[in-house]
Length: 395
Image (spheres, rainbow, N blue to C red):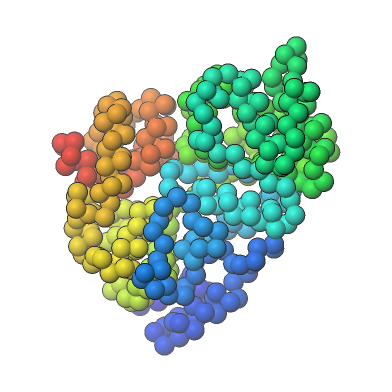
């Protein structure tokens, strides 16, 4: 049967109706644990009571039973962050798990004994981005605070040598010299810099310089960088200065049908183990793809028995469906930026749409489109159905 075949491939042993629960327990008990983490990271197949299910909002908590591993990505990241002077680049649209993965790399680093700092650029005030000097001082001050070091910016900042060199000396002679173990510096929402091309063109090459300095200077080997962003990079950067063509690239894939099935079982949906159940899940995946947030939202409502799958599919693109709030948010973005609505219509109606780079960046960041080489395609049928109705798109 197809349902048990998918589970057998995921669990690594032959699974049938009689041994399903035992196989799931064995998988959870025998699953390899990354060094330094107290619990395995992956789907927990133990059934959760409906009233204990997590509503999907923001990143997935570290020891949540609803985090889905996308092997071998996690293991690659554990290994890479352990290397002196390493750099990990994580790219994925909004609400697809990039911050959840970043948090697990940081947690692994902490358990290993490394120092860790996480900076989310969405949390910075707008005025921080008004100049390179102001941004780099914000950057250094926050690193100092998180490491519980007294900020000493004025001792290292010198306008005669410039902000970039002042920041580099601050990192090299103060921050890295003050820590005994490696420092893992995680930069989340780096795509916010893309809205400030001049600032990005100065700061991003600085990261590349620090990465390359690790091959020559021992002090820079302490620094391990994690750069997280939502889209392709649509700002002009010299190939020899960009941090986006070095280090370990991670592009998060959507959930596979087998992963959706496993996640459904963890939400108490026992019917998902059968061949008929897999066919039902396939209908869901056909509508929303393997988008992690959309999948989890569906399984949350199904697990709480608030809606049937048939009802969910029928109402998905309507104002009464479970995706209504999410779809309204997407609609609001398009209404605030009519040029994005025009571009999205072009993607829906033309087989070879050509968009301006900044427009592509914004639509991809919202998760409304996906890039396949040179081709731009709608990310899922749900958006096509919804915007056809509310914006009057004709196909």
